[in-house]
Length: 459
Picture 1 (spheres, rainbow, N blue to C red):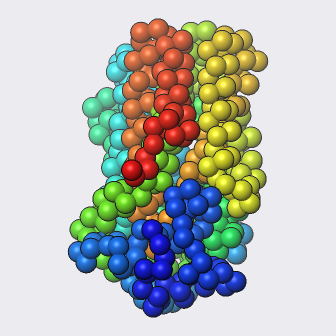
Picture 2: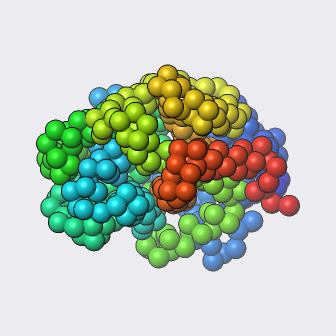
């Protein structure tokens, strides 16, 4: 599409904010150019190219909404970014506490491995529902109030899980817990929207690093606390932490006005428009969904592998989560590389790392050294793939960050839920090699999509 056909009112102002030394009339992008420079305004959203009934804002609407003042650009406050990363990590950790404790929960509730294996999948289905129905509100409502409200409701869901007397109650409570654990996906788009495009990769890298370290740490201690004090104890501890964090966020986070004035139904309708008009969004979302599915196929069955092969319990399963700290610590570096180079190019190496990880796990997983190296590679591939694909989507449409994130994360966690289910099926059929076969197949599909063997681009 040629930018010479664009209405110049407002769009040149938006362009000049990012590229003061370059003329809008000199730019004639195609998809390849847009992929190369992920900070460019999206050419699909001109007043000329969109029907009047569309729900995604035009550049004029974007500029009009952006003129509404935001009280404070807090993305330069590293202490607040650290706090938000901890809040994000501890909130999303509730989705994963059950994984290293599945064997103990199953024994406590007197159900089989196959029956209890459905709980992680149901929790992630709940997370996907929350992403679909709640995260778009981040573009519509004041962010601080929304974040504190969701954190408060999450406390009640955590308590419901902690007091569950049977599998049915636990499943329903886990669905609600997953739905309300989406706080990180309200925080990340907010930070992405407020920071400079030239600093977006770096800032998101710092945020995701803190989130990942918090997540890894809590997943690790959940195994220790669960084995020592019982699996319910980790949820009681989590409820207390979330209450404390909700109060802290209420006092520290400034008021962040909404980016859009669309009604809720129009907001949801605009999500379909984004999916239809954004091939990069579709590609990045399915890519991470397949990689995350392979990750969950491994993680949701690892406790069974450790018990049957190494005779380890949930404490040791939790320790393997510490390997993930390495992946978390390199996330800021990945963000800086994404600011300097093409995120898609770096993503090629991330997919290769994940594929290498499961090759090692399949061949040498019965050796402790092979298992540790495989887990390390897997975490590196997973963390880097996640942040790189996320950076790709946030620059597509201004002021639609929460809705872009909704598509990305719903697809991601739907893939995760499917991966948990397929992992349980693979384990029931062929044990560890069945899990690895499922994971390698999933990553192979991600590689096919990424390397354009199958293309999401419009003909």
